[in-house]
Length: 344
Image (cartoon, rainbow, N blue to C red; front, side):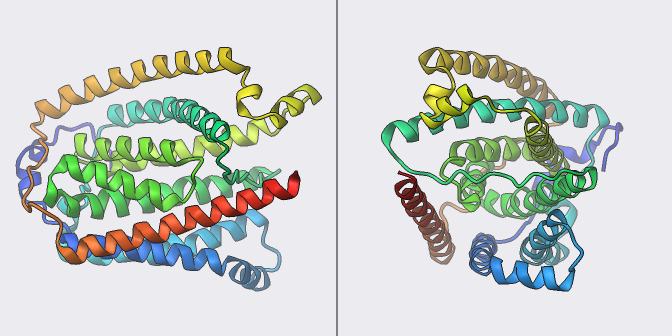
């Protein structure tokens, strides 16, 4: 997976030989992921109850890991694995090694991105609340033991980090590259954000999708995006576990009840968030500049469009998947409005 040795084939030869799934097959894979996720969400209660009966002594984190695996392994990882066996796996999925130095840089980028995305999410949340748009704010059920924390890191960090990247930046990115690399990065980022079904997290997920697509392209390696995604998700879990140990004062609770804008200190808080974002974006820009030098030195270039437009069947499947996810957003918004009405 990781190597310090130069990889001369990472230039034009690799992209030229990359096949990947067709546009129609790529769209079908995404539709399968959406439908299976919605179905599992609808039947999560009976499935969870069945798992609890099957493993009566399992902890909550173990059951969550099993439920997560029931989605990622058969509906994301298995179709991609079967597909890549047929489509010339290594090149199609960018299964190329990256150096240890590059990996460490990506780890640092992921940790910085945790706070960058948090800043974006805070500003977006303030906007939603200011416009009176209800949203669901799901909270993690945090473990109290070391074993529970490790299981949650695997469930939320490692499993999605590996499976989602092999799916989005491995199979779908190479498939949609028939429309050109730049379009493929943007399209997979949008589909990635939509799949998560969170209105509050939408801008942050879109930003992450763009960064993950860029990393896979710029390093010509899905291991780059897997490293970033896994570290990012694991850091979210560990930060939440750490923050849960602190006590919330009565003053903080009073401010939080008034909304995110008041809790963050009003306009002065907004200014500080923007300042933090500027610093973090400067750090990200420095990483991108170094990465671009490496990319050009290895002659890793974006592919031009091989197909001018999306086939009608592929477009129809993507539209159907998007409509299903928009329905999920609408239902979540309605549930949030009902919850707010009940609280009032």
